[in-house]
Amino acid sequence: MAVTLPDRLTAHLPAIEAAVADAVERLGADLVAIDPALGAAAEATADGARGGKRIRPALLTWSFIAHGGDDPARVLGPAVALELVHTCALVHDDVLDHADERRGRPSVHARFAATLPEADADGAAAYGRAAAILLGDVALAAADGELMAADVDPAALRRAHAAFTRLRVEVMAGQFLDVDAAARRDGNRERALRVATLKSARYSVGRPLELGALLAGADDTAAARMLAVGDPLGRAFQLRDDLLGVFGDPTVTGKPAASDLAEGKRTLLVAEALDRLDASGRAALEAGLGRTDLDEGGAATLRALLEESGARGAVEAQLAAELAAADAAIGATGLAPEAQADLRAVATWAAGRDA
Image 1: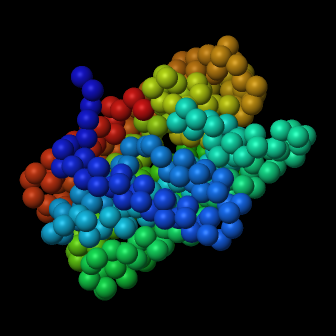
Image 2 (image 1 turned 45 degrees about the horizontal axis):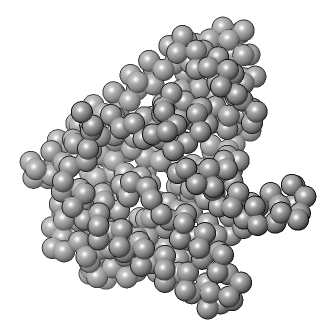
């Protein structure tokens, strides 16, 4: 049976979806007003924001209500702001990972590279990367205006803005550490977990829960409890993502098979394998990681190394430990029983999803 998110978390998704579409349309109109030549940029930005689970804004609106907020419409602006940051992160991530597809469609840099058929391949690719970086920056810049549109107490909004700033710094810091680890072939386990926390856990779960609480006027203790839940829950979410990136079904995940291996990502899965393999196995794994020409046969060899070394089992054990930590933190939140049940349902979904 498919694992789904609780109804109280998904109830506001239609309103969130409409708000995202409206914000992206307004942003596109602003771009075209600057110069009609930006029409293609507006279309690409809208396409980049289309689709996805909307888990971040759903968690924010849920937390707002759980902490006494009266109407989720008051925080649709901040919910949209999270999606704009996410759009920026995805567009930039595809550039960093040389990924030409996103959600079954051409990624933004591949899309713009294809508009220069008369250019040489290197020139078209460079143009595509530049366009994607700049459009990601546009989405990131627009996020502030959406956050500040929240209809909440000004003092609560100021505190939320500070947390939103931390979120953006953390996700970019996590991206840098991820790139740095891949470039230096750093297989350190603790660093892999740090990257998982900063690049995914905080901005996907912890900070959205914290933001919802702060926007509702919750005190620092209540907001910190949301972060204490979100960090291990978010790491579990990312560890599941790491497993899907190697062992998942590409027709379900929307990503090419073994994409993380071809991108050379130094995930916990890779760190655990490097720690367990003998010299020959480590050399084979290192030789295959980051190969842009990695075919299915090569990917199967790497998967076997990850499986037989015990790395996959170790990551699954770490995922279970994160879920246990999240469960303990949920029990310490002081939230109503139904709210705690919702968070536990999110944990079950994070551990069992297949995309």
